[in-house]
Length: 329
Image (cartoon, rainbow, N blue to C red; front, side):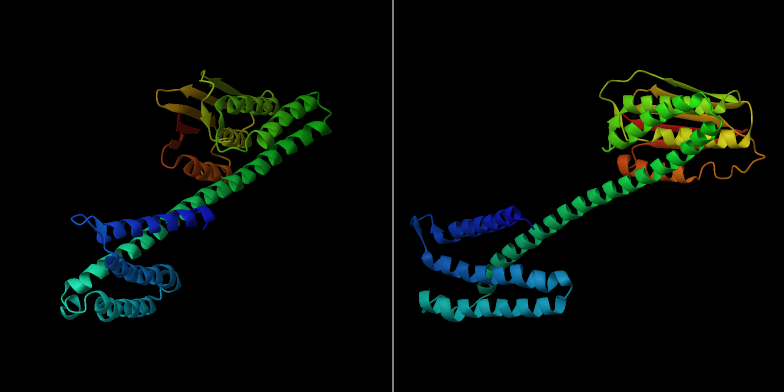
């Protein structure tokens, strides 16, 4: 626990003691402080401090409930005996010292339970804050891990294609290098935050789709349409590109011509709507269309970034695989 938190905790504890001191020791009728009552309160305070700051962390929080109960009971008995046979003998030797009743137990117990309850509530609040902080750190760590899985997967596919063109001394090699460089720059330097500008994602998709169209040559076409969005519209990075990559991989691996892939991002009332469809041939092994590493990772990232506030649907029908993703604006 930080020093500032300790200062706040002790200050609040001291404030509670002070308020109880005022309520218990100040006599409105006589407008004087009754110092005898403050002594009774201090007897409760030392017992509460021992239980709260020693027995709670040493026994109770370590699930040593029996030891906590025994030692707390001993402290309460000692505090009670001090009050009955020492403090009251000093201040009220002829009245309260010989007049024992239930109030003699309830009143000091109420004070002690108030202090212990405060400490328990404070510790519970700090624990909740710590858990919340750890959950945020865990989510960020998971997010970075998932990003690191996506990037090498993307690079592996594109470097293989670049190698093939270089062997053929194709004029498209330089264009591929330029597009790939732009994609890498975006991934390395502009995707470090959990949310990025949607315009940057759209430009990245354009570069990627142009790379894919170069590779398709005359075997098919990928189309990309998108609406205009406000400049401050943002989304989680590198989400859309996984679906497009998956569509290109399965469409091109199952057929040699008439490859059709359609990608669109539309501006709906409450959502940013992304749609991606691709055709494929059932004769090839496309059993992993909905269960690839990239798709699994992107679903995990969506849960981390958006919780349940997104709509993702995939469908396979009549040789068409489609993805619909709606993210909040």
